[in-house]
Length: 133
Image (cartoon, rainbow, N blue to C red; front, side, top):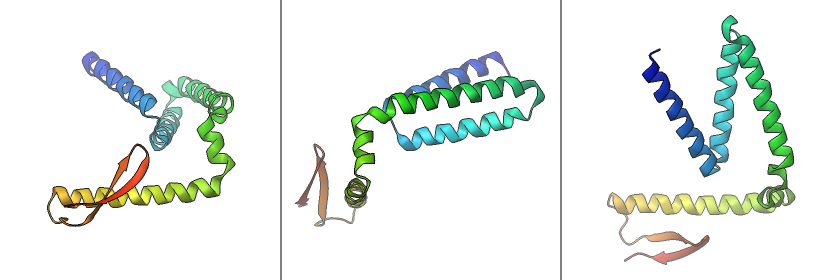
């Protein structure tokens, strides 16, 4: 691989990692974890990359375990989700359904065909329903 391509791949990986760190997307972090497991699992079967891949796998697994047990599990949002899973799950599902309904209606307005329908908008975390004109 050419040095320029390596440098560009390295910078793009850093940019993606910075985006993951800023967004706090749980699904994104799960995708990163699965991608790393697949990549390191593939590299473990190559003789030249076996030792570095195993070391990186153990370091990432250990670091992730320490991070989750010492930091993530002590955050207020995590304790709230774990403390009352039934209530928050139902509320979360209701909010997500309202958001998807609003998104569908907005797409209909943008692409024509939703005039006169009820539009759901989200204002400062509260769901407010109003009629479109």
